[in-house]
Length: 401
View 1 (cartoon, rainbow, N blue to C red):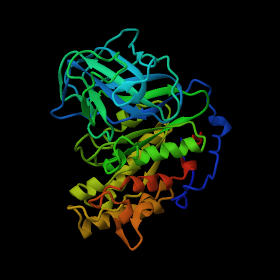
View 2: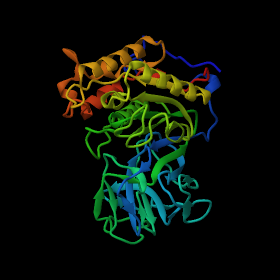
View 3: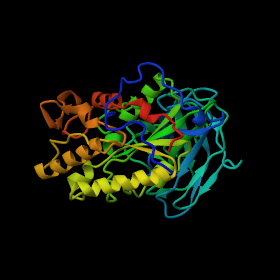
View 4: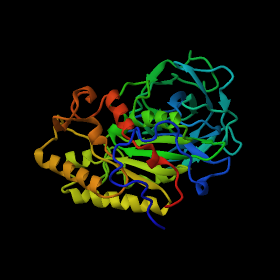
């Protein structure tokens, strides 16, 4: 099995390479209707000191690619005991805590209205009779009858969701009972759809920069969101899943397992994935866990090989500037520069995120208009610039791997 290299080091920033239409995948890659791909995803892990139960959560997410027969995946990967899920509903979001009338569909699991998720496991719902347009805002309502400590979920959603004080209100279309606001997602970590033709899915694997820290809440302004819009505008049937975790590292566990440790569950477990964009290293460098550039480069090589076994392409991103961080030192900066140089000179496909957002007068720092404050996390404009740096031809499904 050979490694797929679509474009070499010269394909660093190619956001305008395609112009209009997204070119079709080669004939050998054409897939019959019915291909299931992820249209939304979020990395799941135990939320310390967060309990959930005896009430209903209504979690708001935006999908990417259009499709039919959506299915949900609920996760108990951080749990230490089985978790019982009661009523689950899935509908189009009407704003606030409300669901669009007539769309709040009952969700079943093997024909049952409830499910038990084993500790450390996930469950898939049955297909739901609902067509989803591209960039659909959906409301997933989940009632858990018994209180669960350290519930599995995603802590930095950059999106408002809703809780009831008590009771099962999953079937409610109105927002009346959903009086508590949160910026977290509980249990839900994937939505998939069936496509009516060829396509695929891309996973954005990273840390807080991929997670969207510094972007505008409730407006879907993370760089993977902007990437999804570019793909849609170019005519690609490509789902985009955000597997960013704030504080994540490549080499060591932290807020969640390392990128290497969570590769199977946060990337390879999603259907239809043909490419991964990995932007991660700054937390390894800042924490001192990466003592030399070779530490990160060896880990990248292992991730590339593991993905290639499954026919998935790895596209690395150069590490963005970070002058302004309290952890910044010149010695650590030298590691970042060396890693970026190696990425650019490798001959493997990459995206030059650093070049897209760095200050032209001082490449150690973000451009002022792209800095959300603190020197590390881009603003929403910076995230848009990062997405614009992606050569979309890198993300075409390709049978050559």
